Length: 319
Image 1 (cartoon, rainbow, N blue to C red):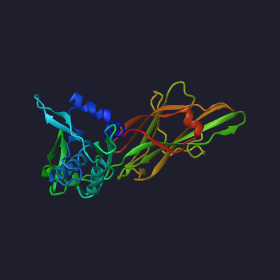
Image 2: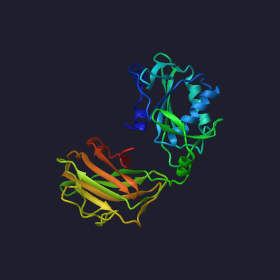
Image 3: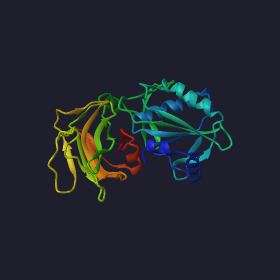
Image 4: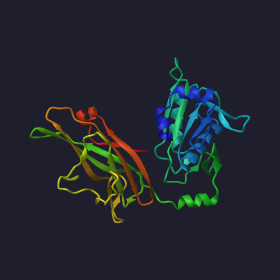
């Protein structure tokens, strides 16, 4: 489970369990107490700025506010107690207020949420998700004026060569599989269910020489649409000669790019049923990569209910 997934699924029961089990701080998880929900104390603002800088300059991470962490007898930083925040709404309001000035440049995609105690609507815990950033390095402000990175269970000041290296990085693409399930078409006594597959770039950098592959799960009636993604037999990327392993592969040369904020249609898959029958569900494995972009694998599943409702364009995939 990555930091975003942990943040999305986090509950007050998870926070209780962290304390009971002595959950260890790690590369993506940090515990902080809050001395004043209005962030009037310098230490609170400092903790926020350092954590924002450190996680953004590394691999992203999650701050759980209101949990005390100490080094145990074995030298491990772990959760050891709860220190509930008395005014959650004010605290999160201040986090949002200082979010634009805690680091420079601003980290895009930071999220906060609260976990009130049962029976209390404004006392409890909070969590902050800080994504990894490709627009750094990010300097911790609010009186710090230093660059940090996450190292193990702590935040470390970055060395000059690390800062210089980050300034030399190029913005990265962030690729996702997306699909569009079209409304069924009646052809004689058959109903045709067509799903178009696309690669969406949500990153800040362009993806050069994109690659996509798919493999249908057994016992699902979908197959590759013979008329391609445009209905004229064409695919969005050239089809590659594949090994006899059941995978269908597409790939482009270095003169093809998927630019930030754009979607490139790749291919389409189809299933047919007798008229009046419920549509089938779809399950397939897929791979996505590009030049200097690590291969990502995932599973696309579209349930029968989704096919009936024709939910349309939806994103899926890792990350």
